[in-house]
Image (cartoon, rainbow, N blue to C red; front, top):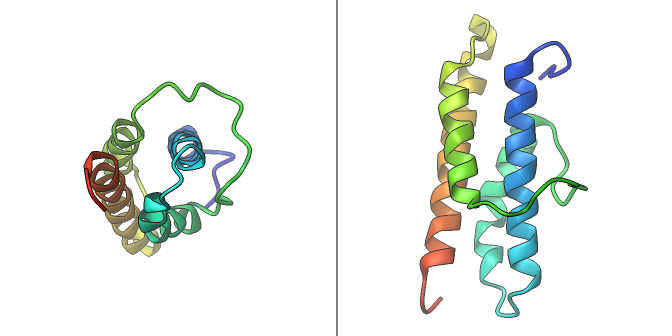
Length: 112
């Protein structure tokens, strides 16, 4: 995915990077390991966008990662892609929604 020429794709990468950093911060303060249950969906999302998980993020971590990913999913739905990238866009939308669902379930769980 080439994000340099496309502001929508750049915004998607920014949103996912932010959500990932927020979850990493939450993960670092939780000793029970429950955030590991979100690792696969988060890794899949990073792989589809070609970004490294556990990267450096210097922006604000004051947001709900689920809301950030849902914003990204809405943006992905509007992304104009070539015919060759349609399956990628569909996989990206699915990965965004799956990661948001996984994070929501772990965040909201009382006993994991």
